[in-house]
Image (cartoon, rainbow, N blue to C red):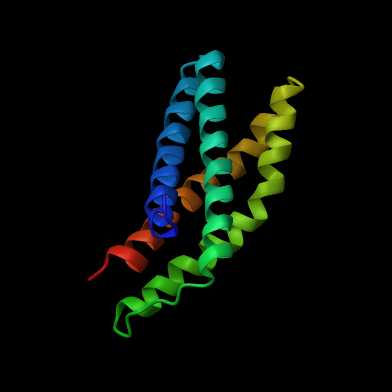
Length: 138
């Protein structure tokens, strides 16, 4: 696998993470804790693999500037800026969320998850949009 393949891998991992997050949410709404745990751990693994691959890619390639100078440019940065800020900010919250679930502190897990889950979904989906705009928009 070359560095040129990593952005597509990253977008795939983000997409899979978003799907697993939605499935995990659906499972807990149906009171299926085991299904919820499995899907959410899958989303966590996908997000962790994404982060490793993303950091490796940018270590090898560096920063990739947005190539277009048209109406999509402000849209791209409008999506990119909150994506990056929220992605960085949410890592410790996800770790606390997992820790609370691990310790079976479900009341506090649920309180935090109400805030973390939508942000995690946003970061996963906006990551795919950033990929499409940066690498696939012709």
